[in-house]
Length: 263
Ligand SMILES: [Zn+2]
Image (cartoon, rainbow, N blue to C red):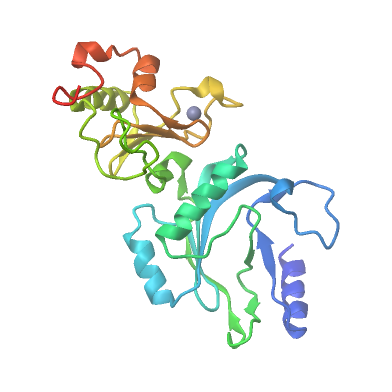
């Protein structure tokens, strides 16, 4: 396989062609000239980003991002970064695209979909003004893998709106109207169940795993300890009220869902 790849790279380069690979696996039966679009994708084993900027700036952004990539590639111009997942994502292509877009926005990268093809390391960047630069692996940590819930922090957290002031507004600000004693009790319960903290999120399996096709093998849920909202990769936003129901909490016992001053 290595020899075949090497030969292909030499031939491609001699003819001035670049070489690319699909990060997502594709269904079988595609013809020679089909890359495979979003509808042909079978699963996605890694989240990825293409940062088409000066590598030093791109690396500085990556270092500030709390989830360090498993693989970093110098593309011959900018940076490609890959976060290998413990379980490939199979469900919900729309939300996977949303996650890739959020990752791109956070790291000032290009907007990509699951079907994107990336430049193959060890090939040459044949675009004009790229001076035939070699695309090469800079960081290689294939043993560093992540659960998708660890990226929940990227997604927007809705602001609770008990008074119907801003029902569609999204914000990462804390939610003063939700009863903080209840949030703390729910957070304690998740911690006791082994959910792991990353910034203001506790990540672990979804409490509504029956809504998932195969239970929640991806561990795709995050609880935001600042706002009291949950976010599941498959279920979407989950209200504190519904989390209380799933965990067997009685909000009234903690003083209700809302803080006393606004209730
Ligand atoms: Zn879920």
